[in-house]
Image (cartoon, rainbow, N blue to C red; front, side, top):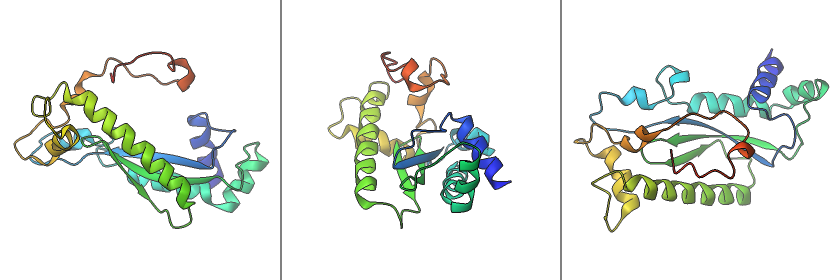
Length: 182
């Protein structure tokens, strides 16, 4: 049964070969104050809760050796040096917390953290254009992230409201497109 779930997860995200050394399952959630829509900022698939528990369960399941043996028998061979980890993307601050890293290569985690920090900073810069409180601030990153802890901001996630569409496809389909953060 665990192998069925694991195979379903991997097939559902079209990840059945070419595994990286480090694979991140990232749930999403938010941190806000005085926000009547707070649960709407968390994962809808998780019933309005943060998605870190699901990410941790998926990563843990796919790291189990007996599950990997059964997956290999089904044609999904995960290399021994591949490790699945879990994270939580805070949608109001664009900070990603990583979990259960005790047995993970420290160098790989450092590289991932650096890339995630850069992506979060770039996203904050994009959002700042739409947020009066952040536009022109000397510390744009701090201004954007601070909105989630500002009890007077009932819409700290306002930057998320500009979505133009939802694309479910391999990244190669949109790699050349400028989606402008939308």
